[in-house]
Length: 144
Picture 1 (cartoon, helix red, strand yellow):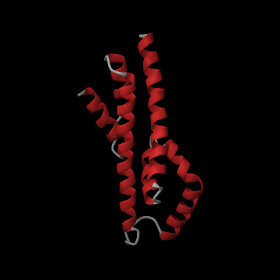
Picture 2 (tube, helix red, strand yellow):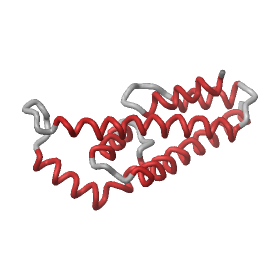
Picture 3 (cartoon, rainbow, N blue to C red):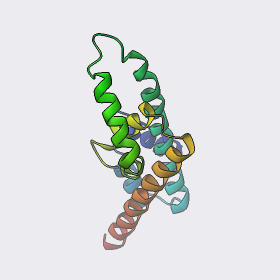
């Protein structure tokens, strides 16, 4: 049940909804007797799948670009797409960052980044982030 809670917290953390999977992961490391590799895998998979929801939302939001209320012009979209194709695909490695990470994954969907490229880049960045969180949590546990 604890792993499932971590999964859902990590999933929600990756969407545009607020949550903090790092705190849950750290608490589980310091307070429980869990398999570290399974904690890492659970958090990473949940977080990547949450980013996939953002990607899907990005693919859907562009359908409304011709509506009067849509806040971005076609010229701005074209310009952003050109920049994203040149520099932006690898910015998905930073999808783990607070504030800008979630919108990056939506932009990946808007600009239809190849699915497997999206998955690999996002998983690499988020997996590395959870490794760092685990390393700090293990250190905290040894200090206390």
